[in-house]
Image (tube, rainbow, N blue to C red):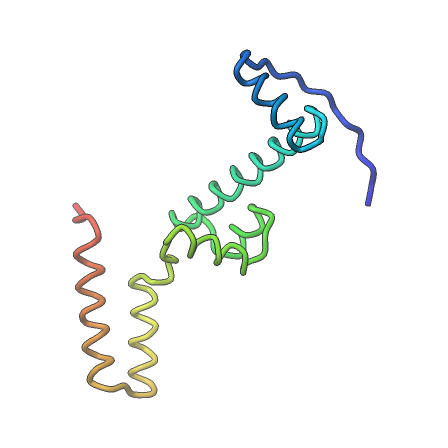
Length: 131
């Protein structure tokens, strides 16, 4: 692992924030600088995850690219999506079209056909009307 030079950044805190930082520092037994560094790292991690999920939801990136941007595995991203109750875009018309193609090729039960029709109705009612 390459050693990188540390760069000093400064931040202005109001008295309440400074006092809270001092309390956390004492509770954790770490320097205020170490606590701030930890908070910055956590904030960056959260920011990247939020941005990756937003891009994924918009269909701008696939799950693999979103996971790479967030700096996590695809599995970890999937777990995060589940925690946030976010349905992957795979549950869209393209998914249904692919499922229909499989049914045409390999056959399918009446119940499966009915489920797909019901799902398509739900999809079309949840999407805004196009102009």
